[in-house]
Length: 514
Image (cartoon, rainbow, N blue to C red):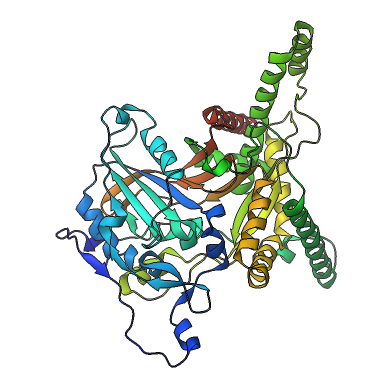
């Protein structure tokens, strides 16, 4: 049965009840195995200190048929157990997923919008920013919402704003699940096409040309062990005492509850590939290079403004001269780092998820999350491509490390030994001691439609973590959208930071074209 075709008939609104099996248990162990345990990451995200939500804006070409969306979600998304379950404690005090009764009207909302409010050019971004700091969802219901908004903006006829608790899955898995609900706009019978991402082994990535194969493998293994040990020590130091430099983009404990602003800009995927080929790297290298160059530009501007406000005429003249000479005004040995969530288990494919939602069978699911810490280069560089080359060197180095799997395994062990509160405190400290979050998600190559509604833009972000700055890259339909989410009491002008990143990218593109 085709999910997209299932909603072409009469729209229906019904109450879905996922009932527990009426089965008597002979012992406690048998009862516990009836329900899926909450993953370690899900248990941490369920704590009030790290109550994280994944938020995504889908801008549409047409007005929303509310009943069609509801009917489509009932026949697809609700067949995924995480979207029809709640977290409860079993007899041993462990969190498990328990099937719950789902009323679609509690999760698919149609808000009333003030006519004056929808005149804002950033209406959907502002709406999503308010959701980022809204009160937590009712824990007695499955933790997800879709806000259907029939408001025409400058670049969309309507929009959907999704809010899903992070315990339901990681960003890549959740985005894959949503894309499995879509079909190609040109052919509604086909699932979207997602570019394949190949993963080379860590040892194979450590190339020792000219050496015999056994010796090369041995040296590769030693290099992986060495980098892993170094990264683990660095990770532990970050949890305990090693903090990033205090900069105009560095947040503070509690910043997650402050007001947010979401901005975004779009560039051509072909232009990104042009830079990628010029540095002989990957798209990820270019994304991190854009981030590094943009943040460097933004910090230089902010530091220059602060010095100008407190400087005399002679000092201002010297600063202007340094700028003309290409010298950086940033403090030396500036420490600016990013945290990246990595799933240690591959996310399910679109066909697997689509089949699961059609048949109701179980599909493998992610949220086996570890953390990786990246040090961002902030040195001023004459050649714009050097930012991307430096990013490529960082990623090559990280690919030879088991930091992600180790942090997942150690976090799971810590949960068993010290409990979820201790694990949450240490995770919170690690995030708070770094500067920003970074991610890159791959989207469909062609235009897709969500239950008959063509999607123009996909704009994801995340909230609830102690960072003042979150940067996402989302590819879709031959373009890449840079999404900047910022705490406005720390970064008052996130639009400027976003533009600095885009300007830096244009400089890279010009250099690559030479």
